[in-house]
Image (cartoon, rainbow, N blue to C red; front, top):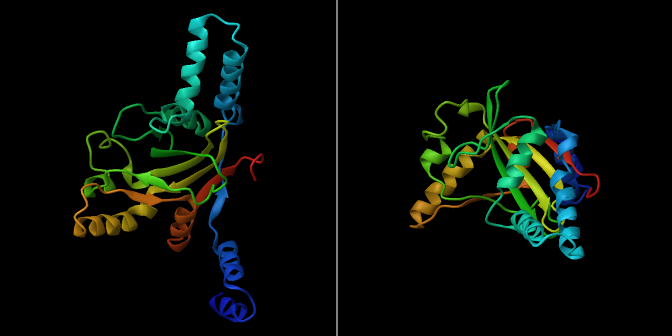
Length: 226
């Protein structure tokens, strides 16, 4: 396979070679989801917007609708989307702070969710942050995670249309693909005396790490956006 790429490099542009490599070496598989839950938040948001615009309901109902819209669009909170992701993936939701966001009790696999709201079209390259990273966090050492199968944890990135609250795409990776890269970033931040360690990744980065480590990942894409 390497010889084929070397020969093709003489005749094709670098971007073409990269696309071919990703096509041949891609380990992506379709992600199974519960379709009945994929549009719930977007549909509810449209109803809330109509309620506010029509202004025919009781004041407290209009306030609830405004609050609902605000919570969906907030960059500070993703609780509603995290809860919905558990329904979409068909697993148990976990509400406790500083622990996992969900768990597949049948397969015994915990999940970390990263809902990411965007306004543009950079679905695959939008930055996804892991804040306050540390060696304990990287190795999942905490009282909230001690009873879970941390070695087989999943890392889910979900890109969301901030305006419409649509799920644009959902990618499920093995969290372990990030470990080495996170440790390197941690050491770099320590050497630079940074007070706060933030690790930044993206869907594209996770696809590349999965490919390099020969680890399968899963994806669902909203045909409305692709």
